[in-house]
Length: 155
Image 1 (cartoon, one colour):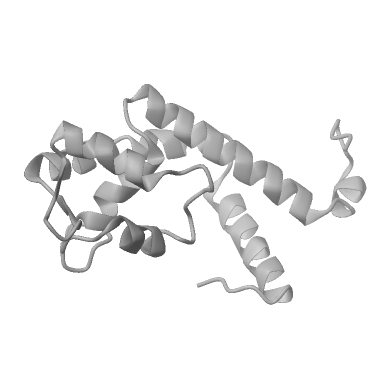
Image 2: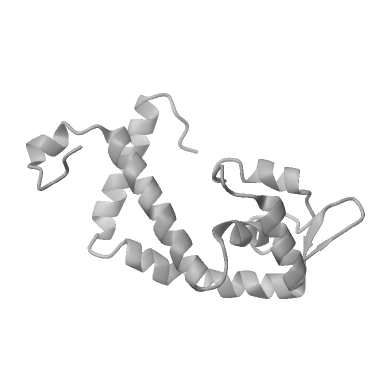
């Protein structure tokens, strides 16, 4: 699809799915590249977050890889290998595994989660450069309406 300097009228006729797909792939690639430069992967960060009682986990209890995969089903990508990512975190001492195969966050893992989270504002700022909060909110409202119009859930 030709994407050079389209007029507003031409943009109005463009397929949303094409542009949202391009945006999704570009945003994920950018975020993951920044995280890799900082020494961690997005799935590793998600593992730490999902096991932290100070973040996504409601109680900080251990979870098996299948339970974690289920918890992350709405944002895991096909290439994400939670078993391999968990092994890296086990080797680093950021997770432990109990006899039932549940992964548990260690104090070092919690500190790593906190450290990783500190990079999020800079990554977000780079992504949002040149976009006002008002334009961003409008974009999200439009996307949410597109989702509702096509029978999707926005929760």
